[in-house]
Length: 294
Length: 282
Image 1 (cartoon, rainbow over the protein chains, first blue to last red):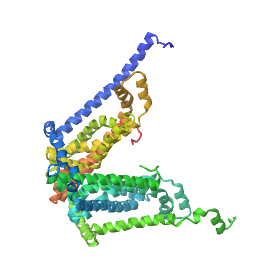
Image 2 (cartoon, each protein chain N blue to C red):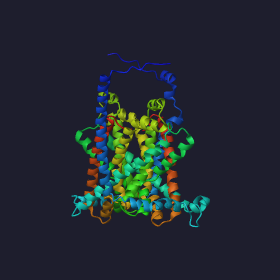
Image 3 (cartoon, rainbow over the protein chains, first blue to last red):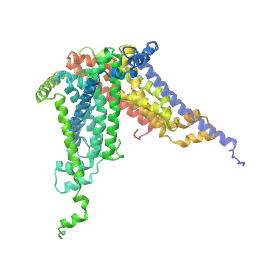
Image 4 (cartoon, chains in turn brown, purple):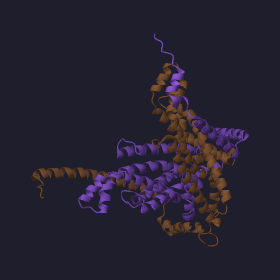
C-alpha cells in the first residue's frame, strides 16, 4: 500500500523550519544558562563543604569494608552463621526498642492533643480572630521548623538525661507538623453544617464540636497514625543526644567499634520500622478505607 | 404555624432497626479503642519515668533557659556562624544532587514499565526501603567512621539517605508516565534507550526536578542536625553552644536556622513553580 505524503512548497517549508529552529534555539539557550548556573552553585557548594574526591576514592574501600566488618563476628565467621552470637544482647535491645516505640507513642499522643487544641485557631475558616490565627500559625511554624533533636538537646539539659526529654521533643515537633495538617483538613471542611449550627444560636465551641469535628476526625486520626510512623524513626536517634531509646546503644556500638552489634541493632531497627509501617498502613486501611492514604 | 406530627418512637424503631439497635460490638468499639489508647498512654508515662515533680522542675529550668536566651546575641563569632550556615547549605545542595544523579539510573530498574520482571524489581525496591529505614544521622555516624569528621561526611550521609527516598519517588514518577510517547518512539524504530531518552525523560524530568528542589529544602533542615554528631555545618556550632550553656548564642543560631530555612523555602517554591507551572507537586 502506498500513501502519498504531501510535501509543502519550498518557501513555506523554509519559513516553518526557521520558526522551529528559532523556538528550539531559545529553549536550548535557556536550558544551557540554567545548567551553567546550577553547576556554578554546585562548585561553590563543593568548596563550601570541603569536598575532597581524593579522600572519597582513597577511603571508599573503607565504606565497603565497613559493611564487611559489621557483618563479621569476632571469631571471623559471618554473622548469619551464628544468630545466637550475633543477637547476644537481644533482651536488652528489645527492651530499648520497646522504650523507643513508647517514646514515639506518648510523644505523638501529646503532640496530637496539643495540635487538636490549637488547629481550630490556625484554620482560616474557623479562627475567631485574625491576630489569634497569626500567632498560632507562627507558633506552629516555629515548633515545626526547629528540628526535634535540637529540642531534645535543650530538654536534656532542662529535664535531665532520659526518655522524658525525648518524649517532649517529639511532642513539640509533632504539634507543629500535625497542627498544620489538621488546620488544612479543617480548611477543606464543608461550612454549611457550621451555618446550620450557628443559626440555632450556638456559640463558637458548639459550632466546632457539632459541625466541624464530625467531618474531620477521620482525617485527624489518619495523619496522627502517619506521624507515629515517622516518630518511630525519629525516636530511634533521640538516644544520640541522651534522650532515651535504642539510639543510645547504637551510638555506643558505632563509636566503640563493636562491629557486629552495629549490624544487629540496625537490623532490629529496620525490621521494627518495616513492621510499624505495615501495621499502621493496615490499620489506616481498616479504619478509614483506602481513600485517605495521604 | 403548623406543628409537625410527633414522631412515633416505636414506629421509627421498627423502620430503622440498624440505627436503634446497633450490636454491642460496633457501639463499644470506639470507646474501647479510646480507652485502650489512654491505657497505653498512661503505661508509657509511668514506664518512661514521668513524674509531676520532675516535669515541674524541668519546666522552671526551661523558663530560666528561655529568659537567658533573650536577647539573641552572636557575640564575636558571627563570621564563624555565617560560614557554618554556608557549609550547611552546601551540604544540603550537594548531598541532594548527588543522590538524585545516582538514583535516576537505578530507579529505572525499579519501575514496572521498564523492567517487567518482578524478580529483578523486587530486590531493588527492598534495597531502597532498607536504605530509607536507616536515619540520616545514623548514616552520618557511619560516614564519619569512613572519611573522618567534617562536612564531607555530611554530604555523603545525605546522599546515601536520599538515594533510598529518591529511588522510590523516581520509580513511581516513571511508572505514572504516559505510555503513548514510548510507543510512538518504538513505532518509528527507536531502541530501548531511545524510548527512555525521548519517550520517558521529557515527561519525567519536570516532576523529578520538582522533587529534587523540595528535597533540597527539607535537607536544609536535616543538614542542620547532622552537625550534632560531628558532620559539619551549623549543627556542630549549635550543639557546642548548648553544651557550654551559651544560651544567647543558641537562640541566635536557632534564629539563623529559621531564617535560612524560610529563605530556601521561598526560593525553591519560586523555582518549582517556574519549572512545573502552578500545580502542586505530589
